Amino acid sequence: ETAGDCYIVSAGAVVTGADGFLHVLEHHDPADSAARVLAFAKYMLAASRTVIMPHTGLPTTVRIGLHTGPCTSGLIGSRLP
Image (cartoon, rainbow, N blue to C red; front, side):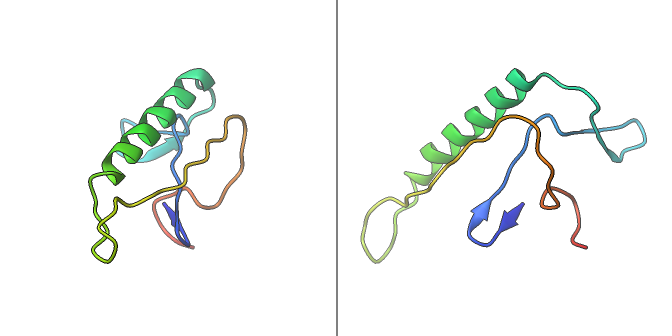
């Protein structure tokens, strides 16, 4: 999901049910979710280094912040209000 110039991801929040729809998980392993988000962040950093800015000739830079624990957000989803 994007919010301004930010790309927001989450892990362990939803699962695709047998009906094909996304369902919010009641319980999940926070350590597994954090590890999955960290792995994604590392891949994003590696990928950003391969994109060269045409006006400077330097690799792009990205900022990454991680949060673990409970959260409430209207940003993660499949459609806008």
